[in-house]
Length: 196
Image 1: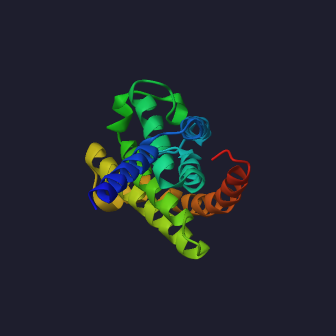
Image 2: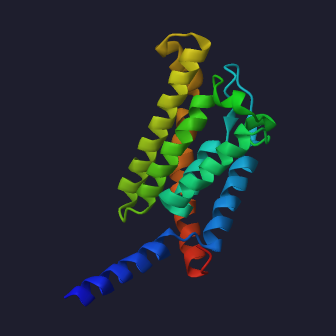
């Protein structure tokens, strides 16, 4: 009995060690998608509110769908940390911690939750429920963005929503849906090729 317990403990310890290891493929994929986020963030159209139209939402959703929630979130955090230390990875080649506390910073913080929910949604076998989970992540992202915009700009909730969120909703919803369609296929091909 005592030997069985010892053997079980050894096996569990080995499995725990295997689970804790980060593979080279994971490191590369996390870095690659942080780079994709940085590149797609630069495709932007200035808006009167100061919140530009970008492909960030698409990139964030795609990252969650392709890499799943764990590695996808790691990729977004790497992207945010790069921007926080001054790398010009945010929209319009901006960088620095001041961006994270500016009137657009709430959206960047919201990317973390959005990635998690898109990643969880992508693992759902029902595409409709998966997309709805991703859209819930988008809603959280917009809530974070509106609240920070409201606080920094010292505006009311309705005015902040109309300036910082409403003009982008249709584009962002379509971005999430497109990310699920493209990302699902991309993930399947990458898995078959052994790259994920």
